[in-house]
Length: 553
Image (tube, rainbow, N blue to C red; front, side, top):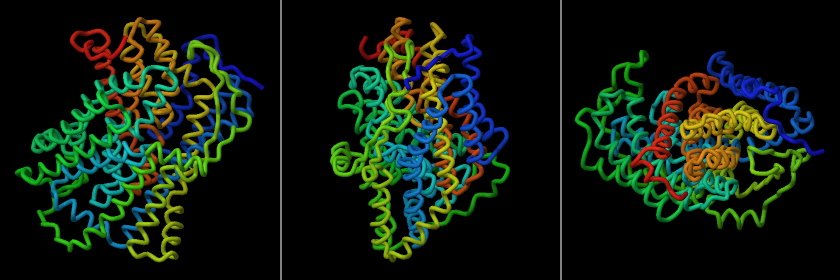
């Protein structure tokens, strides 16, 4: 049975929009205000999304339930699969005592906590975002920061803030490829336009990150190093996106930024080392520990400590290459239409140019998933570290027990996102943004932010709202490339508050059950940075000389 979406079921656009927002309000309110455990908040949000979709928007119950199961399957594979295996690798290094050696080697580059944070959360995290995305950078950097002694909430929040500017080009440009697929706009034009928006924030975010951690004065003490990391990331980000293409933007930029920062720190260190691992002004902060020169470990031990992470980096990068992924999929991919959902739902104008059937093909690419690459890397690393097969099994079982509630949460979160999409709730919210007239460049950017907050993915936000951005901008006489790109650039700032990312961060930093604290930590920063992107896009739409940055017509 075919079901057509309706975007004003109550005959009043504002009332319909308010009702469409109920699942999101329930989810975020349960986390941030009621402080429910994440899995209970997610399940409550899922229940409300089903009620609104079925009772108010008229979605058939069988279709709605099938949609929730489809979302849960996507939440577990590939997203939950990534989290499980990255935490497994981390616990393997802990079991062998190698994480402390890794910590000492990083401290050998700099003992200053601000610069360790900059190197790990911003530079190193950007590489993992570029290679794989889907929560991998937050999981990796959060785990490393915890190993360095950062408090869990702080490690989580800072990892989320850092994982913003690279996101649009993440997973070898998956968000931009998704945007191109639904808009039909030129891929290089989209890459170039986003590459003329996000470099501004690649300059801002590192300063913002260190200010959140150390305060204004603490940031000013290390501004030369921050500037080196920021410029050496932003400039390649602009050049590669504009003159090569989107796929390797983050990988190239992060490698250059890491090399530039490490090289700079060989010749420059702040006059006053910041050794504390708590935020400036934190009432729980004690005195900074005395400066202690990290022990020098034998080269063979340093190699052992870094080997698991080198193996991980190689596998994540190789697994993300399109040619490798396609070759593996030819051998192992299992794809099938999801029952009671595939081509059952029709998306209607003005959200799309013409009536469009929503596909729901489940791709069980069990071997080419990023999580599978991480699992293989972890097993190889475990063998290299000298663990027995039985010990690997024991630690994997312990890891599975550790993340079990996180997996439930992520499955429920993705169910909410999929119901929001297939029932048309997302389109109702998006159409409200599209009614803002001359202010649409600003609010259209926030639509991308909302899309990522709802779905947990810049790719999904682009697929959801890319067509709407194109149609709305053409109706308002705006450049469709500008607004389609703004959807992705604005969306990256929603990455830090989407429930999926918060659960990943909480799991990686071993503070499960404190997701509400993480949400409160990052919420203001997400809103503020999204609004700044909106201001930039507004200027690019109307104000000279910013209009000169706009690509195409």
